[in-house]
Image (cartoon, rainbow, N blue to C red; front, side, top):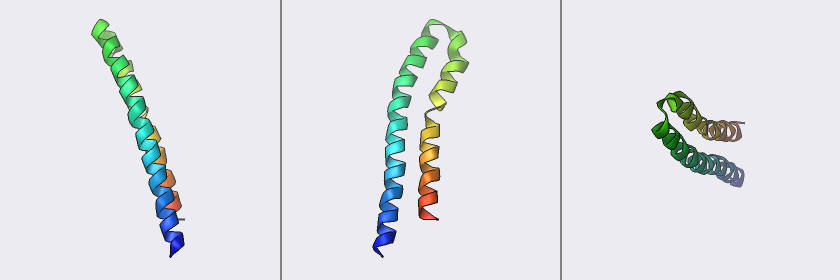
Length: 71
């Protein structure tokens, strides 16, 4: 019974830490991308791509959490 609780705790730490890290990274990258696009519109594609990249951290955290829960 205690093993299930520790597995749930580990999964929540994996999701929580990666989601917070992705949010912080996206905030910094997003503000820089908007500033770059304000100066020159040709940076829209690169700015959009760079804004989406930190979300992979949260996806990796989800994969790790699922691996922990369904071992």
